[in-house]
Length: 133
Length: 251
Image 1: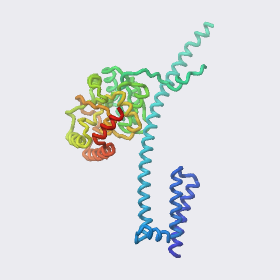
Image 2 (image 1 turned 180 degrees about the horizontal axis):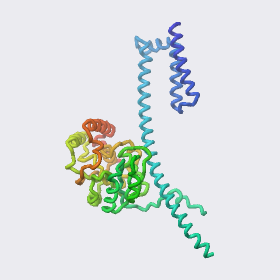
Image 3 (image 1 turned 60 degrees about the vertical axis):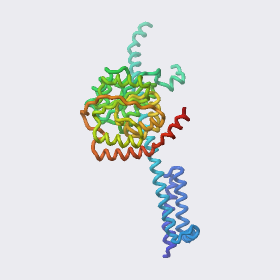
Image 4 (image 1 turned 30 degrees about the vertical axis):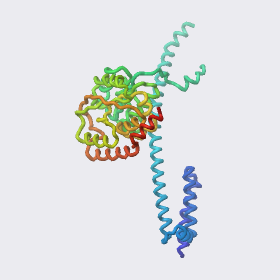
């Protein structure tokens, strides 16, 4: 087995898993696009490793294999940062929703209370109006 | 049944300007909350709102029976999350002033009128009731440090005894204020950034009957709090000149 076949297999497996998840609709909008791009990059680099050497020559890096690793880690860090930003946004949304829910629950309680009083009053007044008729 | 006009249907609450709402955030304060509510009701003219922060005990029921309006949060949001719920309630119902105080009975109800009067007199957007005798060594150190860092001259920045006016309520009800955890420096920094004025007035406080200070319970907590708030300062940092320029632009 040559190195190219090994890396090709690994990349196929990874890209396949990603494509499967995207196809199954497990990823939301922009995430799916991001992961499709990742799957594409993995496929190209895995199946055609010479691309890495070419990239190394273009960028002037003598030890080319370090290039995808560096870029990869950089992108993972970016992704993690983006995740925390998203989580903070979500936290804000959840807090506000919780507050709104509680406020509306209070209003509902009051409306129900008022409605309850009104029907009680209505029931009490009913015999009188019936008698008047 | 006649179809109601749209305005009446979308605005279920008649909202003439109401004067004052006392917001009492409470988490498992069943032992003291009733006394606090009665104290507030006797001391000042206004409505009382207890925000139960997902209490496990009967805080909400007791408060309701005592005659307060009660909002129950379905999951725990922390002291500020509960207080902000009160801010949003006040904004929704058109209150002119919000008074916040703790549910553990450490604030004296008979001092509330003076605090509200102080707000009228000073015309500050926020009035903070400060108990200078209560300031512990840890708090003093923290205060020096944060004063250096932010330039905010408020002594008791964790005091829960505060009066907010309409402008302050609007700022604090906004999503921008939703990620704070305590009613402390983060809140004050946001208010100052919006160009609102802060004013401090002395108040007496009794020691807590139940539990300790949430923030200053141990030195480790203090360290954590200091670090957390330092990061907050960094996020909110703005030079004095830039702030003045921004306020001028807004005005």
